[in-house]
Length: 226
Image 1 (cartoon, rainbow, N blue to C red):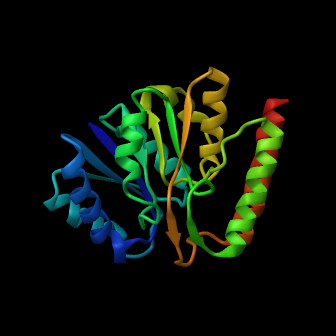
Image 2: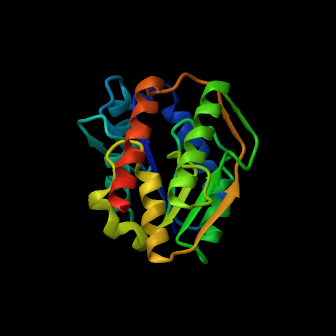
């Protein structure tokens, strides 16, 4: 079984297409699966749309938290997942959906699978690519790690390996780095594979705020380490 966890925010226009595409793919590659949508503070028709899909789709489960907090949404999704294998995706499926089956297979041997845009091809805003590359380089130098993608999408986890860390991870977007550091401390196996990414839509996050937040979060992680 595979549990697909997707934090969502104001995704009403694309939600039916996203769920349909995932279902069509999983029907070919998985005997059992569930799709967990966790809304965090949407202000559009996302809640109504998600409930409509849930009413007609046995494989989909929908949860909602009131505040904008993608990290908390991820935690709620994992806590309610029925499978040991968790695959987290972006709502717009900007990365290759084949990551699901590749990651699920690799979770037989690892506690985390990272879908890395840096290793693959990416069509994204150049400013976002450069900004991400600088942040990744600093994180690698500070923590002595080789992993090179800390974004929320295209990540897979063994549920039992991360469950104990969920109560204390970042409620915003820094939780992937924290989970990597948690697994590194445990001596867990992390596998990194390339993914192709095409993300040309406007970001759901304020880029300036997000950049500042990420570096402050990096500093807090470093302080905890020392």
